[in-house]
Every structure is written in C-alpha cells, then in structure tokens.
Image (cartoon, rainbow, N blue to C red; front, side, top):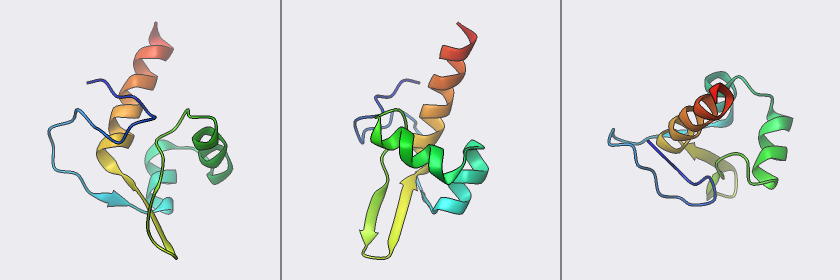
Length: 75
C-alpha cells in the first residue's frame, strides 16, 4: 500500500469511513497539536470539513499513512 499524504486518493481496498478527531487521536496515538502541525507541514493526511462544525478524516488515508510511517521507521 502506498499513499501520498498530499492527495485524497487511497490505495486501500477496504470500505472507507470517516473518523472524528477523538478517534483519530486514539488510532494514531498522536496529540491534537501534533496532528494539526503535521497536517500543516504535509506530514499527515488532510482533514475533510463536512460542515462548519464537523471535521473528519478518511480512515483509509490514515491506515495508509500509518503503514507508510512503519515502513519508513523500519528502514
């Protein structure tokens, strides 16, 4: 699986779903501050703003990002 964190295309074949910030924090093990800083730096998948008050992330994009991080850290 590969992904470019600057695009919205995921190469995962599982059905996708949206995750809100508390689930993203739990899934990735990162703080809210780190998530937002890394998004700004292009190091973390971009959030999707569904409404003025609802921001979510694609679970497939997050899973692809975590796989990429594991490969990079183990190289």
